[in-house]
Image 1: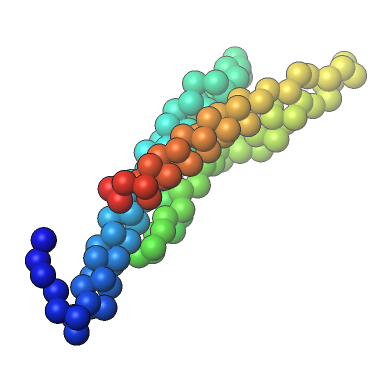
Image 2: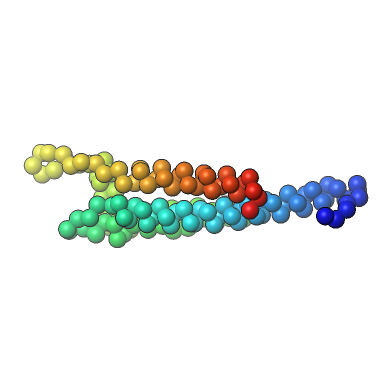
Length: 129
């Protein structure tokens, strides 16, 4: 460890905090991409398989914004199957007057992804890397 004179103490502290902040930010961005890819794969795996529609094949993730301090990944279903997401998740009326069962493939995988993200970010903040 290098010695620092009292005049340079604030600069030394600022440099250390800046390095820590950059490390945490880059690791959180990496975690975001990793967790969102796992979320995509898990929802594809658990999405319903139909004979007419290939809904699960249209599930995807993309980075919608990235700044120096953060990143946003967005889960989505490509056109034209995106219209089915709400109906699959909540169920819908059938032609015969009955009702289909809802499929919570999205909610259960979201909870898993959210928990993993929180644990990994907490670890990065605690360890600094």
